[in-house]
Length: 378
Ligand code: ACO
Image (cartoon, rainbow, N blue to C red; front, side, top):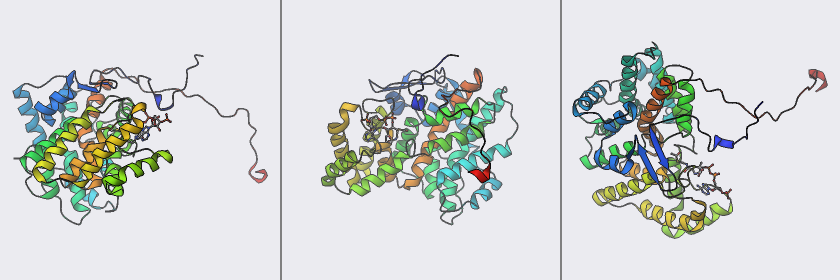
């Protein structure tokens, strides 16, 4: 039998061949289907980027128009899903609500026709269209309000912000939010994508694939970190307190949220773009003391941990942007999921195209040949 070296966290072990995105963690480069993230953030929209990731190339203007039209007209969720969500405890985390709601879609669309391109297209459109509606609906219902109907005359991001606040958003705010979705749409073989591919490899339905990935994204070492960043900035409270706070964390060997990455050993390019977006928001809508604390944190962490390749990751500045857009902290990770459903669906399609069920091995380090002890003798 071949003996393999056990790598905790499967570090460095390829789990798939993929042409969807690529990260150069030494140079700080991220590409979707070969296109640099900076270029997409400047020139594309979230739905166009979703099309690129899922179907492998940029759409023509006709293809994009059709795709946008389909997504726009599938935004409403079934009354029965809404009623189910009404029964969720209002104190529950919105990620758990999203996971349950995404899984529930599978009850309504249970036909599984994974070889049929029309089925694939329908599932992609339905998930991209309804996940924002479900996130916004739970947000309103947990406060005792009725959900707001999606507006077909608004673009993807503007509609989501509208459904949250019942106010048409400022165009700059909507554009910045759309760029945030582009930045979070895909990121190679991270934990939630791996989870999506493992689930996909069993040939289950795409709703189960997305539900399993949502569950994985929720943890504080993955998507949940952006919530913790804001709590940490609040705890620090002032620029003067940054250094003592960080020194205390380092002494306790506590992880500093929003810093470090398994792949990036320089500043995450998405953090650079998000920092710029945060500055644009502050220039238009007024500054925020959290931003000054964040900039000082980046400086001190680089001084203390730069030699270990610990720099800001995507979660460090995204929370600041969302908070400035008036989004409650516990919606940050569901928003990450709204964007990342794109990457999960792209990986679902790629997995189906050349599927083999995941069945890794393990290094057994338990006992053998142990005699059963009768209960009265234990
Ligand atoms: N703060 C302080 N030290 C850190 C941090 C951090 N945020 N991240 C890594 N380190 C240190 C570790 O203590 C370790 O030091 P050592 O070699 O002296 O023991 C070294 O850097 C390597 O760290 P690992 O934990 O082995 O790195 P790993 O690749 O396993 O973890 C992770 C990556 C989970 C992102 C980690 O950096 C972390 O916990 N960061 C904080 C949480 C966070 O921001 N998560 C969001 C990631 S981005 C995303 O998921 C979208």
